[in-house]
View 1 (cartoon, rainbow, N blue to C red):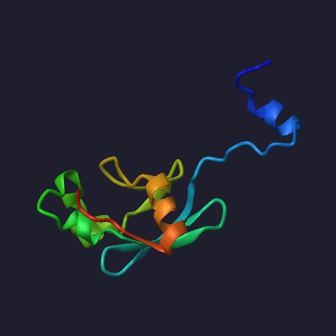
View 2: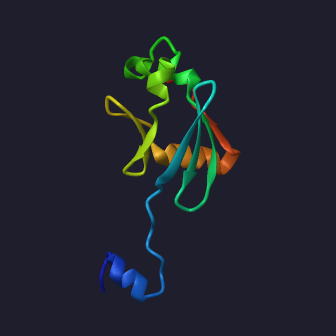
Length: 107
């Protein structure tokens, strides 16, 4: 017996393989917020302001510039900005699923 079945074996056994949590669309909203939708249809708003205006924003300080923040796009299932900045889709999904939105709190 196998300890781990591959995706084809799972499908053949009638088990739906796990689908990675992927963002399919992002819309930039006023106030350093985003509206995101995931592959399964889950959607909600993300407030990034607490992160980017925190004194320890680090690389995310670049997103204070509205022109840079407006460049949010989906890349490989994650919300991404120039400079290789991105948000973890799994944490985003969990919060939106539980609360309908995600307010990112600093560190």
